[in-house]
Structures are given as C-alpha cells and as structure tokens.
Image 1 (cartoon, helix red, strand yellow):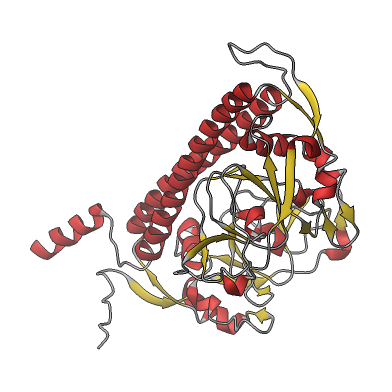
Image 2 (image 1 turned 180 degrees about the horizontal axis):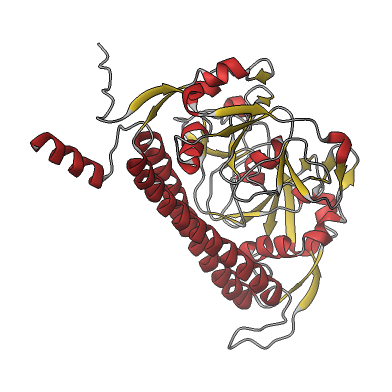
Length: 406
C-alpha cells in the first residue's frame, strides 16, 4: 500500500499554467548571421547549456532577464527534451520556434528553472519510438508544488552552493588535465629530462621491439555483469579506459578460444568512424583478461620498451599515429601499420620514471573526477527532493516548529 506524501505547510499544489505566462518562440533560421546582435535560443543552445550559439540581427521573440526557456521537441530518448535555460540578461537573446518561454511573477526564475528542468512529467511524453513534441496544453498542465518565496530563496541558495562547488571542481579538473598534457609534451619528447638521466634517446621502429597480435570475438551481448572472466570489448577503449587500465570493468562467461592479455600489453582499437579515435592506447598491467576482436595487442620486448611509456607516447603523438590510419567511411589501423611507427625512447629506467610521474597525475585527476561525480549525485538528490518539499532546509523546519508551538 503506497502512502501519499503530504504537502508541507504553506506550500501550494498548482499547475504550471497557474503561475506562468507561456509563449512559443518564432523561426529565425532565415535570419541567422555569423555575428548578430542577438543569440538565438534554439535546441542546441539550451541542450549545450549555452555553449553552442547561433546569431541573428532580428529578434522576433525577445527574451528578458529572468525568463525560463525549455526545449519542446526532440528525437526519441533525446537528452534535450524539457532541458531548460535561464536567461540572465536583457536584450541579448531571442526565442526560436519549438522552444517554450516562461515568465512568472509568482515564482523565482531560478527556482522555476529547477522545477521544470527535465521534469519527469515532461519526460513521460517520450515513448522512445516517436519524435517527442510537447504541446502547450500539456505543458501548462504540469503539476507542481510551490513553497512560499522565502523558502524558494533558501532552496535556490542551497542548490547554488552545490553548483558553485561543482563548477570550481570542474575548473580544477580542466587545469589538471592541461598541466598533464603539457607535462606529457615535455617529458615524452625529451625536452625536459628527469634528474639523474642524461643518456641520448634512440630512434626506433615499433616493429623491431614489439610483437603484434589481435583479440578475438566478444560481442556486447557476451558481456555479463556476473561473468566468470574479466574482459575488454574494443569499444571500451574509446570511452572507458585511458592510458592505463587501473580496473577492468566488464566480465563474460565466454572463454572458448579466447585471447588473453599478458601483463605489460598495450591495447589499441583497430576500427572507428573517425581516424582520431584510433590514436588511442591503453596499458594493461594484468594477465588473463579476455581481449575482444578489433583490439590490436602490442607486446613490447621489456628490455627495450616499457608498455605504459608506449601508451602515453601514443597519446602524446596522436597526429603521427593518424598518418598510419587507412579507410574512408570506416577507418582502420593494423599491426602492419603500427610496425612502421617510429618513436624516440630513452633507457627503460627513464621510461618507467616518466610513466610513474604521469600515472601520479592520472590518479589525481581520477580522484577529482570521482569527487565530482559524488557531488553531482548529491546535487541531483537535493534537487529532486528540495523542490518537492520531501526535504526541507533547517530554517524552514525550525519555522514550522515555531508555528506549531505558537
């Protein structure tokens, strides 16, 4: 038996149409220019949080500071539908067609944005098959809980605190990645030498100091959460792993005629829709992991080359790897291609020292990204519960108790 959650005291159960003026934007496509006076608020602008911009010299649907805009049309399972953007400046933005505009004197615009952004009510219109088109009547029927203005202010303050913390952490991660990139360029070219190392670097061909083979089989349907064996699908090399594989994330029960990793292998995907995707390498420090098809396995001779150094080296010399890629619509890179790859290498001791420094940098970035994910989940939890009254701010709970005592 489900229990209906009571609305907090002084909160109102309303429909969106009770608290806003609503309008639909107008077409600006014929008036798009390179450098116009107005930013056109279209689907890509809203879904990219204002990063992707188009301009117009005409404003057919002017927006004011405090207006809330929302995407009303998207493909099935799209991430743009019901995405909102808060306008923070007058006479700068103009609303495009299929984007809704909301203006309210009863609700704080920042609170209204939190209420509407990807609201479950709007998402329920997406059937996963057809284009989603939110109609005005349906939009204005959206049920909402609205607290008094003082509590709206407190809720917005809490959420802004999380937003500011998340933004600062995001900026710190970007800076760390830029520093790592600079460090790679200096250390992996020999421009900067580590203390205690001075010998000359040697120019070698990868085919002279490595052996090459390929993974086998392993489709996505073969991956099972509780599988017996650790495995790597080639597609995971693009998005799940970086220069070093710290933890293998997938498992499978398919092991017949499988190809297994050896500690020190370097793995590269061999096919992709873009050449740049193939200039990717991941070092695996583990024996016995099943390696799927379309994975190139590079096995360095340890007396010449440290695998992790090679993985970082490939990332730092992407343009040189791309020159070896073949194809037109689908691109490929093979062992026969990578055998031709030339690189400058120091002693294996210096290779290991360089890789160690870069790995430390990677670990710092990973820890920050984990912290960022935790903060984003906390903010999501707070957002979902503060705007419905399921969680109250301490000030509001205190006031509620005082009112009851009085």
